[in-house]
Image 1 (tube, one colour):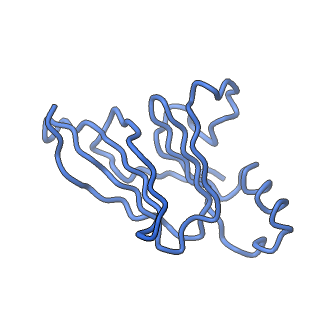
Image 2 (cartoon, helix red, strand yellow; image 1 turned 45 degrees about the vertical axis):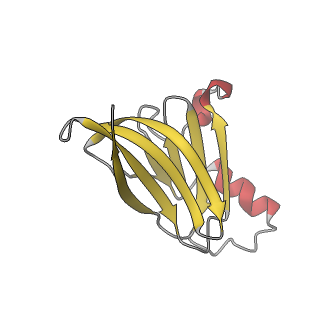
Length: 132
């Protein structure tokens, strides 16, 4: 079951900037353009300090299969509660998290695919405006 997830509806042309996973938590940094402010803005998708249960990032150039997306291949932000990745996670963790409410979050930019499994909803934040 795919679920709608669009934390930055007024933005377009998302680009991946960085992933930070350290003592301050797990954060994904993005840039995107907003017609409303006629400028690019730095954006952050932050997961609570408990962090995600699993994550990975890959250059989309390596994802040649149309099954590399969990829903709409044109959507930047996607989430689902049922995916092959969640099932593989359960298999590799010997099903000890089977009763947990895990959500598979995906962020697809022009060049990157970031996938996160988490029990906690991310906090999506606007950072500084960038000069273009």
